[in-house]
Image (tube, rainbow, N blue to C red):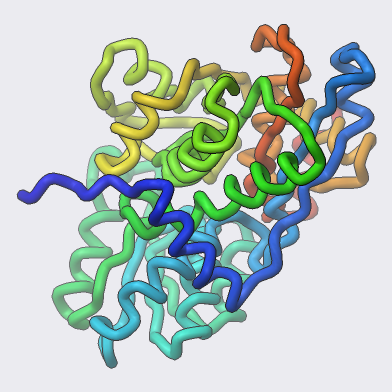
Length: 336
């Protein structure tokens, strides 16, 4: 098996041109409320990169569009197949619609209804599997391979791919260029990690512009494969990840992501589901922002005071998406 081709900052620059044909940048919001909550001096600011504003409600659209653009000619009339907890599903569906490709997605049967609805509304077909038994059956990967073999589909990875990583990195490029335009510096950067495509792309961009910034990965306590991997110095797998953060339940980080993460990420932190629920409620109360659990986890890390924020620069956190069902959201935050 050939060694993975690790994306570079130049790949992000190339992806920027492609994404600019389809998307406007997701907003970078200053959080006065977090600055006050954390007791920061007036010289320091907190910024939230809110990917809930994309057309599919999450960051996954960035990587999906770049992947589709890079493979469109070679795909031809063949369909595209991928597995996804839901956000890459709608991102790839959007990209398929933009490039005239049929998309087939393998999703867990208990994925949020909003993720099913967004994906179907964009024209993709969905096949489901039982996530609770997947660590035993491997049905997710098996079903995706079956689609590729039976229907001659081209497989796309939601995170373990150089073009997906580079596309995601465009968001980090947007953050860095906007803050440089304002004459700001960055001391801390926080991003969720699961398969690692979001973190790897953003870490490349942040490290290029702000090499002195400390980069912190955040993951659920019940899905801490990256924290274990970083401590061990090698990729480790969690056989049955569990959390309300349905978008952060990959078994391990991707091969393309690992070299970037191991080199650029300073530390990995976990938060409990209870802390994530509290952060969801806090974001709604302070910013009127209804985040999905996977999106709120970085705010949870700040509110739980896990990270030493000493320094002179600004703090940036990524809010990866907002795709949560209304009833589920209120169930999560009701007692917080």
